[in-house]
Image (tube, rainbow over all chains, first blue to last red; front, side, top):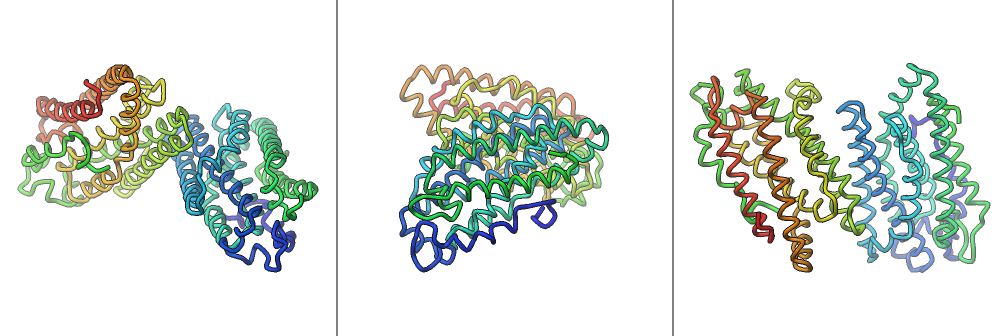
Length: 260
Length: 260
C-alpha cells in the first residue's frame, strides 16, 4: 500500500515546513536538506539528532517485529498468521538497515537505541491486543503512524539520511491486508466497530504520550524534528506535527468505519 | 555457518541410501532423483508425498519463526535480541518459498500445512525455553536437525523440488552465533553444562517423538523419506534415518561441551 491509496495521510504537511528545515541547528547558508551526511554531520548537534533518530527508528522497528510476531499467535487461520509474520519480517529488515547505517557512521547501534527502549516497551505494554482484530487495528495504526512520521521527518534530513528513511518508508504499508479484514468484521457485527474505535483511540493516545516523553528527553532530536534552531525548539511546532499525524489517523479511522 | 564448520552432521549419510531413492513410489526405470517435477509428479503417490513434505517444512518454518521471535524476548541485550530476530526472519523467508512452491504446483498451502500443525505445536509447547541459554540451545539444535533432515530428504527428490530444498538449506545456519555464547556460559559456570545437556536431550527426545507421530500418520511421506516402494515402507529404514540424525546431534552436543 502506498500513500496514494491510504485514506488520509500527513503526506503533504512536511512541505509546508520544509522551508525552515535548513536552519535546523546549522545556522549555515546551505539548508541541511541540500547537504549530504558528511557536510551536515559537521554540526555536532545535527549529528546527535540523526543518531537519536536512527536509534529511535531502529528500536521501534525491532520492537514492532517482536510484537507483531507475538500478535501473529492470535491469528484465526494459518494464512492470517503468515500475513502478520510477513509484516513482522519486513519490520526486522527495516531494523537491519537502520542499525547498519548507525554502524556505518561509526555509532554503536545498541547505545543509540537504548534511550528509546522504555518509551516503545511502555507503548507495547500498554497496548497489548486482547484479540486478533485488536492486533490487526494495532498493526494498521502503527504502520500508518510510522509512515506519516517517516514522511514528516524526511524533509528535515540531509540527502543521505533522507534516502535511507524514504527507502524504509517505501517498504511499509504491509498492513493493507488488515483494512479489509477489519471492515469485514464490522460489516458482520457493527458493535465491533464501537469497541475497535475505542481501541484505536487508546493506541493513538498511548503513542502520543510516549512520543511526548521522548520529545521532552531528547533535545537535539526534538529540535531537528520541528526544524528548530540550535538554541532551543519551538514546542508549538512539535504540537503541530503531532496534530497533523493525529488528524491523518482520525481520517483513516473514520474511513475504516471507526469514528474516533 | 555451513555444514563444514559444524561438529558432526549427517551430511554424508544420504549418499549411502540415495541409490534406493529412485524406486520411491514409481517403479519406473528413471529414478525420481533424475526426473523433474512434471515427470515425477505423474505418480500420484510421489506427488502426495512432496505436497506433504512441503506442507510439513512450510509449517515448521512458520512455527520456528513464531517461537524464535518469542524467545528473542529472553535476550539479555539488544544485540542478542537482534540475532534471534534475524534467525526468525530467515525462517519466515523459508516459509515463504515453501508456501509459494505449494501454490505454484496448484496446492492450497494452508491445506498442505494443516496435517502437521499439531506435531510442531506440540513440540514447541513441550520445549518452551525457561531462559536465554535454553532458547539458544533450542535455536541451535532446531537449526541443525532441520539442516540434517533437509539434506537427508534432498537425495530422494525430483530435480526441481531438490533445488528448492537445497536453496532453503543453504540459507540455514543462522544459529552459529548461539554456539559461541553457550560455550562461554559453560566456561563461566560448568554446572550450566549439565543443565543444558539435559535440555538438549529433552529437545531431541521431543523432536523424535513428534516425528514418529508424523511418520505413523503420513504414509506417502514416510515411504518417500526412506526411499521405500509404493506398496509400503520399511520401518527399519525410518529408524536408521532417525539414528543418523540423532547421532549427528549427539556429536554436536559433545563438541559444544554438552555430553548427551
